[in-house]
Image (cartoon, rainbow, N blue to C red):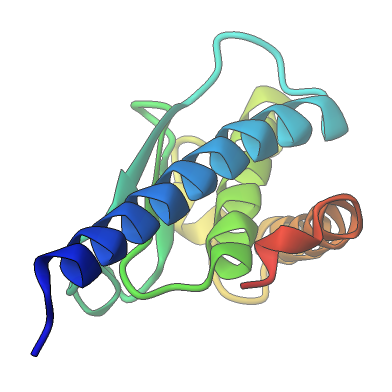
Length: 140
């Protein structure tokens, strides 16, 4: 039988973990901005905790070129994986700022294996590895 004290302790631990994640996410956003020299105005970033986000969107993240909005799925995902997705979508935002992303045909620009998509994958991986060396807590 679970006592109130044990239940309360679990809630506090969960809240502490969520606060830690939130602090890391905020720090990581600043790290990405500095790493790839993103200029203002910055994108709108939404973290989506819906259980079916990945299934519904067939992806764990997206960048809406018209709204400058990034959405990243968080439900049941490792923090490092969330950060990598965030970095990937931030690279797409930077590609738009640089004029590399075809805003008239973003789907074609971001097609699997395209130069744009491969660049976002590569840069996001490098950003995550460098950040992970400075912040090993991201590997939960």
